Length: 465
Image (cartoon, rainbow, N blue to C red; front, side):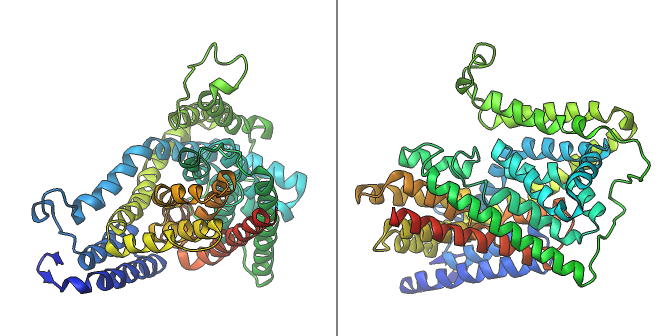
């Protein structure tokens, strides 16, 4: 094995690679939790994988046609940036404009007035769920709902360290992987299994209700206990300065930007499925670019809603642009690590092991996707790596495609939310300005434990019926 000047016996390659991959994952998690910038932690951990896996450091040192550390890491990093930067940019600006216009504060106060501050947490979760199931990317939902969450938690005087947990729970659990969800985590299995987005909807509905109810009760209990211990909302200079007597836009008017995003996205994402629309819209779906158009339209409406606060709009656009760059590069750093990890011999050996798990194929698929999603810190990554290898064998063995689709989708949203997950890092640090020490324990309960229980229930129901 060769990596720079390191030479080992061929028989030691697999063992050293396995130790290196495990150590790199632990190192990445520890550095992330301790607050090391993910832009440093990601490449350092990836370098450890490369060192123990025989990858050359630079392209000139690699053999012809063989990968190297620098190219592989930057390929993953820049690939994600190129695919998603416009969505991050417009999503961040949309969220800032919602805050600067007073729209978030207006909706927050209306919710508190109507359902009481006791349900402020529920309002945040519901807003995230609405956007996620409506088709807005989970990476964008946090930007859009965070201003609303700040005002809700402020009005209710609840500990702000639970805002990331509420955002994550409403975005990446019971909606992201449910039947009918337009999120890519529910759509990827279709191309490998020949299914539809509604595969296994009966079981999916039961599991979604179970996760939503159980997760909310857990989150609410954690918040109530923290309040009883004396924790309260902590204001920051960056919070929008909305005073009690300020004349805010009407709450129903403030919902227009969110409704605009949902409607425009659906119109251009599924024009062929909407009667009477195909004649005036492109017959072909715009795919992810429908989200760019939707966020642009939503931002324009938000600016009009907050026209009386137009003096603060340039600053809001600037904050959004800066926040978008920070958020997407945080995620890119983790994607780059996953790209290098996927090249290690240990990772390939792990794929072979999970592919050959005997017994119920649903259990085998669940374990395989969960493990790979955890290693790469990506739900979609876990699916795209595992399904091409696992799907043909499981289908040949007689596995039901619809059941396999639903299990794979739910499994991808279980262990993917470890501390180094790009969405988690973005939500905790870039969007909410929190630390992992304060925010992640609640996130772990809601995005690791709850989906894992849901996955077990799904497999049990499919097996029984």
